[in-house]
Image (cartoon, rainbow, N blue to C red):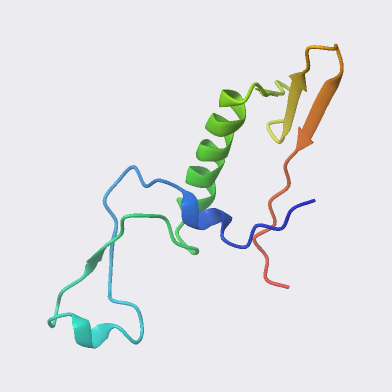
Length: 95
């Protein structure tokens, strides 16, 4: 079991997203200037989807096949005939 606290921060954005400067950084910007995001942030509606796409691409690269019946289950057959099952569960709830 892994607990990845920054998982949603690794998604690649496919569209341009602008936001007001974060609290504490306002003085670095002129009035009415905004930030262009380079990476995903927690709270963006796109964050979970973008992270899942990146995760799925990586697991495919290393030989896992996503289950047709459950998109959170991955299977990899090893050369000796044994199988590795990877089950993904994402809970973005604060403790």
